[in-house]
Image (cartoon, rainbow, N blue to C red; front, top):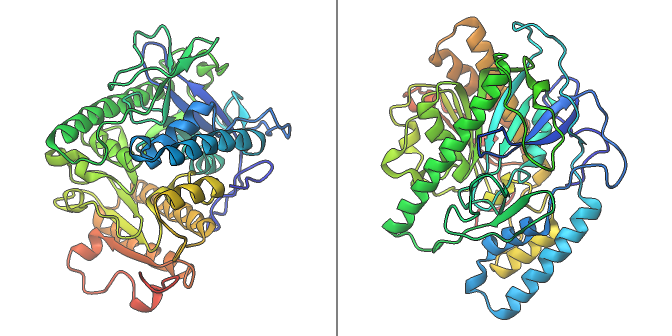
Length: 452
């Protein structure tokens, strides 16, 4: 997307002052987990073309993503040839013009030093979906960082990443999920491509394999939390051993606040957050974007912390396992005519030529699409409302009923501000509890065009 020169714009409903952002790749010593940290800093990003972080760190990431999206083995040689050419074109174009508006490896910005300071940096841990990476949601992570969060975006090493960076001496063979390495570099990093496993066949064997991946992802998610927890309680963040990063993890010590930790996930990442929340009590709230609940099977858990769900148009996954017997407030927003990938940076918002090719390959057109910049603003605004109300409820000691009622009313008002631009259907534990008043009146649900 066309990033501004210095900071990502916060949502239009936000009244704070946006901060500069830095990114840093961080692999805590002994963890086997790689994450990209997005966090506020006082350092202004450079205007130099080659001084900012790239969306695609290597061609492997671009090629791996396209390999997943169009499923190479099932395409004709013509489509495979065009896809390869497009991956090279996209990478080269993105390398020259598509940078993240952030500095690299700068120290985090902390306005207070004591443990009770309200200016310690709140933490969110992000889990990507199938064929994602630590950069796949850079726009969202950078925006949250500009609002004061530290976002730890994982790059899962279970075979679901479009490409996963591994250290050559970390004891892994690069094929942890059945794949092989695509190659390495002089810095001691090797790259594991996305691992296909009959992606279009929903057999018991495939689901069992996916659940093994889910277990790996959940362990990685919890390991990332442990590293940040060590920084937050001043035991000391584990040393950063990722070869290409100069980030000093000790700058996190005493700077982060893990008492209100947020788990965020897209698709398979949503399943990862749900699974982690069921066992890790450090996660106090969850944001799920098109969560893939089917992967969890019988292991699906009801919402046990305040949960915000934002779904694309007619998202087919069954959400009842999450909502039934929920012990915490939940709110769901479904946005009409939004596609699954529109929640990531990999959409018409950022790479229109690439997504145009993919839509052509899959026989999709642009009928009934929404303004993705407005979707992006709505998504951030709803998340801001959610964080704000949950934080206020925690401070006041309010119960879940009061919280969901406040969320219910706030979301209704927020949706009305996008009337005529986005079609949003809302559900919540308030409406599910048998309250007579509908969550949103029909006149406020304005679709962008006739439903297909």
